[in-house]
Length: 134
Image 1 (cartoon, rainbow, N blue to C red):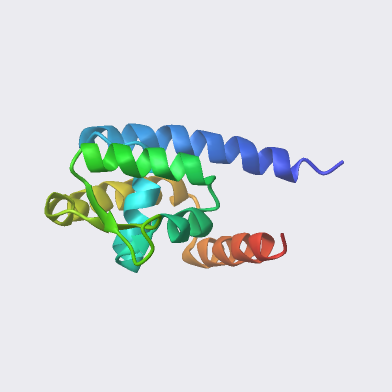
Image 2 (image 1 turned 90 degrees about the horizontal axis):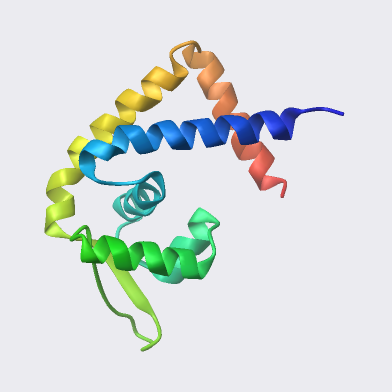
């Protein structure tokens, strides 16, 4: 038996826990950062677009977006369909995102410090290839 999936799972849990520590200074968790990063990269998005992109269950995204809205990071408004909710970064988020990104970049560099740029590129390619197959 190849323990690859176990290894990936263990690394993912460790990275998530350590990312939560890095984000603590911004009063964010990794799951919240995933949503903020997604909206920052793609602009205004519907809840459906977010959960499909992040491969997360709809109720989880709804709760996370609601919490981020309460905290002032996101704003929402109805879409064309009354049931659709459109999400965008708030003005506060626009001003704070650069500092959060810097923390995440520093964290990423610390996690990948033992890998060459070529190895990092191959890892990213392999991860994309693996998820496209499912």
